[in-house]
Length: 423
Image (cartoon, rainbow, N blue to C red; front, side):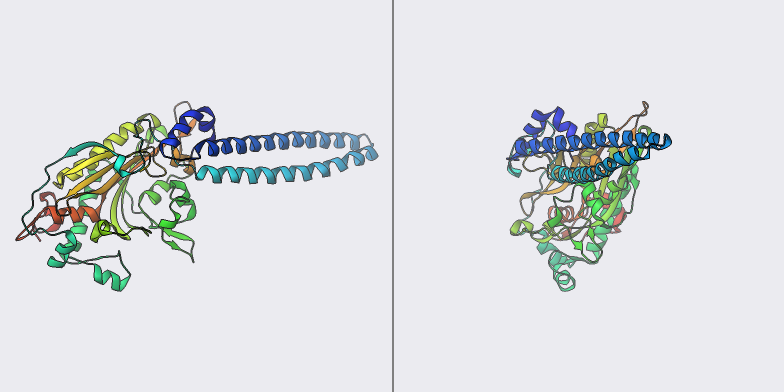
């Protein structure tokens, strides 16, 4: 959530940033924010002035009563009743205006970093680098949705029987591959200095608002109506919310957490050949890394997190590229996002497997997550997160890129976790 002072002090810069995101009515929204803030401040000033008058009258009544001038005291007491009603009305108006302002601020996306390219869709994203050799497969290569049937390692029909489309059942070596990847990703994160967290996979509304999934992604989240709880779309939500309403010390930064969770997304409106098989699921496994940092170091941290995720892809021997997302393709809460895409030689296209983002103060302002420096002053920290990694498309790429006429070779780094080298 943007700060009102940010909008007031850098109106032109924030307007330009929102226009880069293709927010057509940005100037109208910002003007409305300022108008509501002016109204809130004016109401508070009136309330303070009337309260000051009430305090003065109370003192006068006390003096008059002490002096035995009861009739005069009663005469001005009526004014205190009027003032109480005025204060009540002003407090109600203040609360209403403040709620309107907060609701409006929730609808405004984060302002992109100056390095974010302009653009409207994924086609306008900027390729930062490419790494690795794209494999040349044999005649008769198969996409992963055919390979999993051939080797009987993932069953979508059973998932439909139990739950519905988009909920696969992993079997035998398919299940072991899932577990191997999870353990590999967690071990790598621990070696990189992250502390492992095993959070709940259901969160309350406050948590959804804290990290920005609400109100923006409400329609994409599964909601347990009886208990008013949401199934998490990513471990970012519960892990980052661990620090809601906290003031941490500057010495404790950066805070580095990693967590494995299943993730749940309704993916409403998704269809077509590009989402076949593991390419898009309603339930999937993911290891997520989260950092809370000093504002001066968050972009340095973003680059190191990007390099860390790339290191995982290199160890898995997968060809990949890094994209800097354009204003029109960025997530609602992000100031700068790098996407990592792995090349699928069987599908002959790039598959997104990770997003690493810096949210600056957008989440921490909602969370009221601050730190206290040496000067004893508090300020908002910066938050970042990244997929390290999401499993479905990683599995798809491993199966497709490493297939041979005789089976599927597993990356060497996974052999110790798998207990086998081929499927």
